[in-house]
Length: 290
Image 1 (cartoon, rainbow, N blue to C red):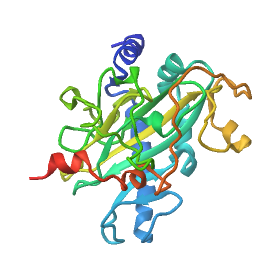
Image 2 (cartoon, helix red, strand yellow; image 1 turned 135 degrees about the vertical axis):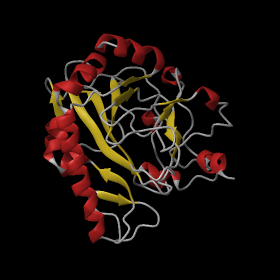
Image 3 (cartoon, one colour; image 1 turned 180 degrees about the vertical axis):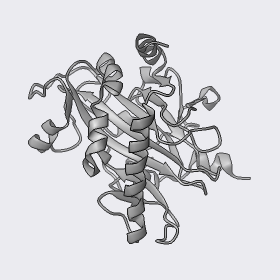
C-alpha cells in the first residue's frame, strides 16, 4: 500500500498497519537505547522519572510496564519522532504544523506482562480539536500470542464512551458489556519489529496479557496539530513549543465541536495502569481465566 492508501485506510477504519516501515539500522538503535533505559530497573525498587515498574518486579528479575516520555529520556527518540519516515503519515493526517503531544514505550514481559483494558485515548487527552493521531512502533515482533494491540474498526466515528465508574471517578476504561461493544470485530495489529500502526484518538483499543515467554515492547507517539490545545493540563510554554516536530508552533487555539469529558476526578493519578487499577471488573482478567 502507498502512503495515500494507508491514509485512506486510516480515515475509513480508524487505524492502519504499515509493515516493516522503520529502517533496520534505526530499529537497532531504538532497541539498543530501550534496552539501556530498561536496564535501569536493576538499580531501583520503585517507579522512577523514567521507568514505571510492573507487579512482581525485583532488581534481580526486573519487570517494567512503561518507559515514560522516552522523547525526554534520550534525544534519539525525539529525532525519530520528527523523522521523515513518520512525518509523511502524521502530516497527511494532522496537517503541516505538528506537536508531539506525548510519548511512551509500553513493555510487556513474557511472563504475564500487564494487559491494557479497552479504552479510547481521547478520554485521557481532550484537546480543542481532534486533528491528532497515535503512531505505535513495534520494537519487538507483535504476534497473536504476546499481547498485540487490538482495535475496533469504525469506532473512531464515536461516540466517546464512558470511562468513569458509577461513582463518577475516572478509571480509564470502558465497560464493553454495558456499552454493547462487539469484540468479535476486534482486529489484532500483528507485525514484525519495525512495523508501525496508526490509530485515531477515538478508536477503541486494548491489549491482552503477554504469556508467550517473549518480550513485547511498543513505542507510542501521539501527534497533535499545533493549534490543537490540550484541555487537561497546564502548559509550560517553552517546553510545549520545544515539542513542535514539523512546521511552526502557534498561540492560536482552533476550537471545533468535539466530545469532551475531563479525565477527573480520579482516585489514582498517573498512568493508564494506575487509572485502570481502580476497575471493579476487568475484561482481560475474565476473558483469560481458566
